[in-house]
Image (tube, rainbow, N blue to C red; front, side):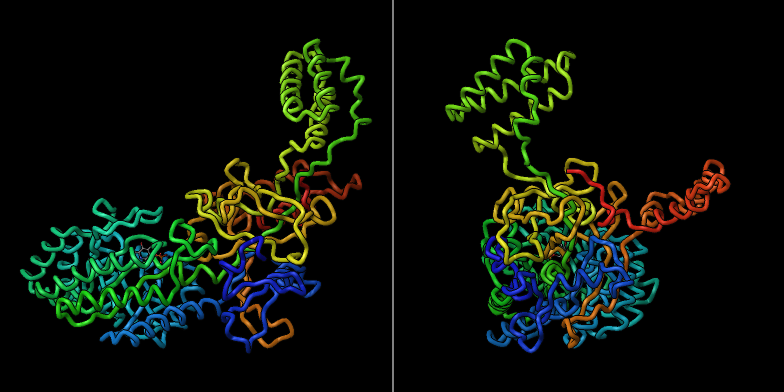
Length: 634
Ligand code: PLP
């Protein structure tokens, strides 16, 4: 486990069982000893084994969702704020919302609404479809839960938000741009709804990490001081200043330290107090997202991958900063709202994928090289390099070996291009150089593991912004890994690889694949990817999303129950995304099969019907490799 820094990032949910060597999950957090831990590999087997042997027959890659983890995250966040509020004598309460953009999956959102209902937990939306889903989900939630409407808005968005208010959802329209105010005034009078208005302030406090580009005076979002004053004036003029009740800011995700957090919250609290002074009926301060995740387990403020505080320390810093500023201004303590997304959903899902094959460095033996034959074909200069290389090897001169190896290879490639060296001879030179490289320890020992996954679909932030996630084999952790590897995905794209890992590593400790090519059975897990990755992923090369299972802890023999299982998008599904019509495509190909397929008179089994059946299967299956028929050559 220490090789993969699991102790740093895994707690309290993920650890290694020392007797099985498998990763185990405690979805309720480690302090809940009453529950049995769940063996992740058993879930994967249950999901992927064929139906005939009691499995669910799902194809990998697979997302395993743990709603119990979601519940624990929500409760931990709420308790951290409850404790900070109580211990500091703060005069109001905490009431968070979940920004659905972090993962809009229906069951994730519904779970959050249901688990958070007892403490009035709400939702945040940033677009019209997000607002629609938040509205319908909150109909089953606590009526006091906030529905925060962020993002750029047109009159349709605003009328939707006003309808939500009519439907008795506790909706707040947060002005992202000054122009939105006119629309809110106009639409609310048309629909006869008294809106609850918030505004997003552009803070001067700047978060310098990658995720902080939204902050500072030049940030993309929010109103400047001048614009805030104009909004107040206009609301006053139309007799709606009492509608302004919330101040929001968001200085970026992964806020690295509580010092920066307190600085931002303090600045916002001062704006809040100024709005009170100017006559607004303020009641809520919404501190946005930014509560970070420790992806590499380093607990450091120095990298985007980690944060230097706990949930509890985060809550204490927020409550203290708001309280200090409000007390200084003799302003009543507001309700504190936060929009933590990453911190709520990151841990709840694990992406499981299989390594199908790995490059091997089994260098050829000298006898298979046909040395005599090789040497005969070489030019005079290449032959001199060959002899120098041989002598350097015998003398064990590392630098000379490397030099003559490069030289010999270059000359041979030139000869090959000119047509004076055959392909067999070129291969023999490569083999010889590999052999010598191995003998002197100059070969790059990092191997390439081919994984049944698309980085673009399932880990888009790795490709897009170099974000790293913990990746670990989910079994065989009682066995010392004997190789180091990078992961290469299925897409025909050289960016489709993972060659940077947490802890600044450029390769991952990995085990030998058992049973040779394509036998499968070596499962890797990507952890902490429950936020953003699913919605950001695309369909590059037409690989769609993974299969998904939802797993609850239970008292059954394995300690878990699969409560939902959904195969990932089929080839037909992903084709439809690009406007193809799989049904028509199938008909076209079926006619072609009738035209060109062997007819059954000549005893062929590959008749038109068999071809059509095979085509139909290809349309219906997922685009990923099927482990047993994997034909990847490494
Ligand atoms: N609220 C707003 C306005 C955001 O832009 C974001 C994300 O960037 C969030 C909340 C969620 O932030 P996080 O995932 O850091 O909690």
